[in-house]
Image (cartoon, rainbow, N blue to C red):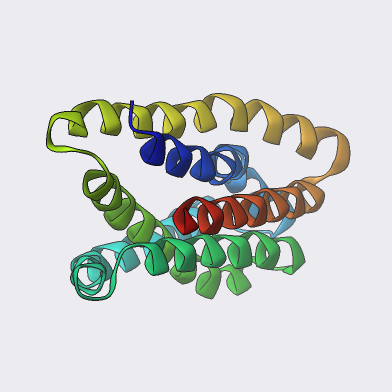
Length: 181
């Protein structure tokens, strides 16, 4: 197994756990605490997804030209900002720019991380390397929802979001360190 791939994937685990924590219960937060209708919740998520639709190809080109790791780090920074911003807003309308940034972050990590893994992996290791990546992604979504539900239930949504922010910062530091070797 390629050690660089494993190190990089482990550096993404805090982001994946945070994603699982937040996105499994984010509609509840937006609806209950930020007073959004069901339609508004759907619209917010559509705005984020549309951002990805309009930016993914450009992000791929930029990563081909300027390198993958700067965009991966930028994506993690964007996710951290998203989590922190969610924790401070008081009304759903303020979530619109957050969802745009979130859509950009998802498009970036979703486009660039797999490309980076194939760059790190040898020709005969690409399938296994993508398997490691998908395992970490899935593990985050196994651990994240139960952790997010627990934190939201006992400490509130805002603290859960701030905890996700801190986890993503840890992953950002790990990614920067994994890339420096």
